[in-house]
Length: 98
Image (cartoon, rainbow, N blue to C red):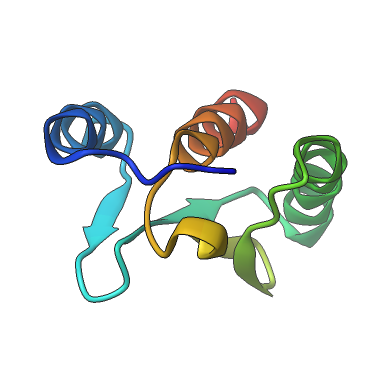
């Protein structure tokens, strides 16, 4: 069972993630970020790497790819909000984008 982040932990995590461009979508209790790459191939390659990680974690992002941009939304549907899985996935996405 995946547990939703408690408020103090969530606020600390949101503060840290905002430094790398993540925003809090309060109405969905989710986080969002737009990743921009040099071209479509770079964006798709990144998405492929993330997809492999997501499958291993059994935690899949909502995303939209338009040319060299990938808009990502992370939330944990099992707990109806943010969980540690979202934080792990966000950090992994940031790492893979560098």
